[in-house]
Length: 609
Ligand code: UD1
Ligand code: CA
Image 1: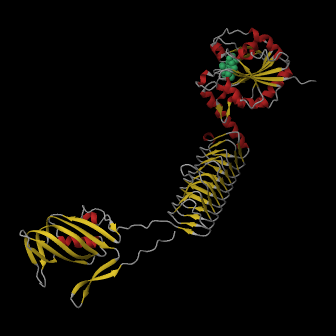
Image 2: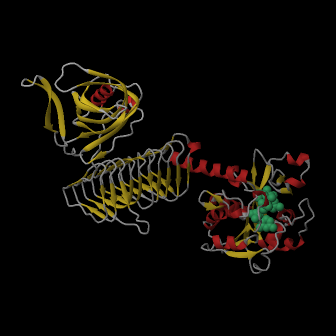
Image 3: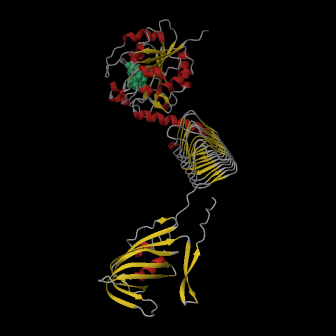
């Protein structure tokens, strides 16, 4: 016996007004595939003799999307209804004597077994049409199917044409039909648009074609038609539930299935654990015992066994076994991360090949690079791969380590067992031989007493610049301050190491001097100009001589003693030699505390990383 031929017609010419979209409805995506592709893939598994797709609204886009599928396109220039769509087949199937499976293009979740069962039932029972029906909880929007006890269809009524009583019927038309084509071809020309929507209904043909039976689908979720965004979301949910159910059956744990999404192209090994808020897209393969999430996106990537991917994004990359990624890592395309690596917080890799047992645990960018095994990338290491015009490549040998905050400017070749000190920038092409230390780090400038010393007692004194090995302290004293006391305090607080006075001018209301070879102080109470101040100061004490002039220009000079009080101001510039160290020690020959001068200790060499 010759097998009856089967042709399939998919109705995909409508705009899908209720989607409120410029994209034809059948091209909206459900996961990675458009509605029509999803349906087509199922349909093609039946091996139909011909597969016809009726196109109209934005047909170029639909034709393009389906360009690689073995289908014939049939144009429905005006979209006057589902019946009108099928009428377009009349000139194309003149010699056809088999069955025509008609399927609405917006029913993406149909299973191949269901279609197979429909065709088989049709051929067993032998009516003119077998319609796939479903008993649904919420029949709103669907045409209602009225049958007798033998499942013979008495009437099909569209939602809009239903009476309130008819609307109560929960048996709906799925939009999938198996017709005897010859019988259908006879009634198609007779369709009219005499209904609420003024359209040519294919459902009318069901009523006229002769014996019509209904076959209920066992899972009513399969026949969800996508007419609006709500139904699109509903279809998405159903698809996700199906996929997750199948993977749970296969030994995968979903901690919170509802918060996870995946595509059919994902392969999960038994004992994979998927934590909440995790999404898998594209062709992915995940190995046993790997834990994904929470909060991760895996796109078109392969991940080995026993890995953990925590709050991270992995895209178009390969990850080996026992690898930890995240939290908050970004593994960008063409990264290959070998076994036992650790890619930590705020680490970004791109086109990076990373050998086994290597770590980049914190705050790094590794782009266009090849790292050996057991490499340790210090916190904040950046590979500067882009010079503003071109990307360049970096290689780092086995067991090499980069210090915190180092910058490797590509192109660069770093040998094996290399140590790069923290804070070091390696310029481009400065290749590093095996087993070397590379260090480039500015020496720190340390300014003692920066906040608590000078600023609190002398609010007007600016920051101290240094000139060679001198540090310079300009300061200003204010009315009423005691010149000697202020300088002593300043020398102590800095502390001055080997200080001396570079310049001093100002005025006094009184001066106290010890004149040459005298034991008593000499007090002058009048307005005086400070002409000069000379001598040395250090934390131990000071030895200064002051010259002042009175209102007639007569000068007095001697040892600076307490009791020189500022009249308007004193402007001083002090210097401190960093190469010397002054102290004051009792000299038995003079009986005074005399100046001791030492060479200051050399700067300590920088510590190794
Ligand atoms: C149709 C059925 C309804 C059924 C439901 C199931 C009719 C009259 N009604 O209603 O009984 O319960 O499907 O989902 O058939 N199309 C064309 N050309 C046109 C009009 C539509 O190709 O001129 C295509 C659309 O692109 C769509 C499919 O036919 O893919 C169904 O059209 P739609 O308007 O969604 O029909 P429903 O109102 O859902
Ligand atoms: Ca529909």
